Image 1: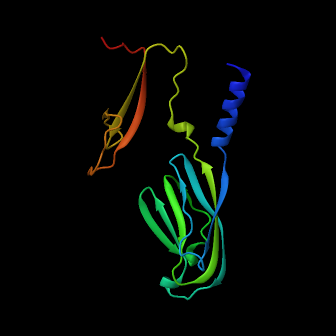
Image 2: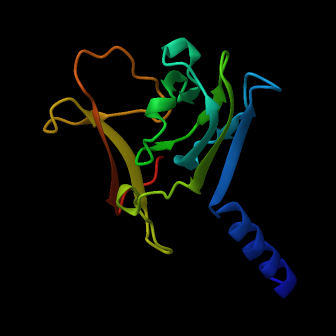
Image 3: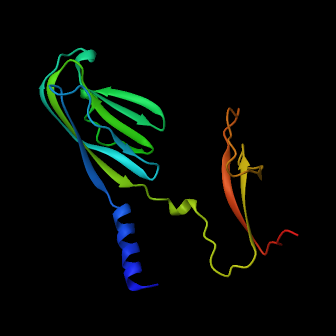
Amino acid sequence: MKPFTTLFLITITCLVARAELLTITLDTAVSNRSDTITINDQQSIKLKNVWLKGACGSSAGSQPTMVWNIHGLVYTNTYAAFSDTTSVFVGPASVYVTSYSCDNQIAATFDIEPSAFPPDKALTLGAYSGNVKVTMEASTDLVNWAPASNGLVYTNAPDARFFRIKMERNAQPPP
């Protein structure tokens, strides 16, 4: 591989896997909704801080609201709940701030980070490992295991399902 190509790939990898801080702002004199921050399934988002200038009434309808869409489920919380800077959400997700009857300015800053793939959830097959068969299995009791299909949708099961991936060394190739 040419040195320039290697440097280019390393640079791209560093750019893709970096954390960033993003801020959304809302000036109710201009609009009643901020821009939306959207993250993908390879990222996580955490509220860092919120700044509010202006006055709002105490009723829930007059408070600024932060709207979260996390994995397709929508959650809202009023300004009083904005102080939760401990929760981290993994994407896909989006968030915006809205306010319909306040005279104020709001700025919310979020920390967006790449989601690390947990190494304890992966199997590694080394080079020249011989014939290895990789299978996925499912169980409802962690004792009895049955073959499972990758990509199959499991819905409305009466019991919880557990999945595992197995590697069988010295496997015979299919005929």
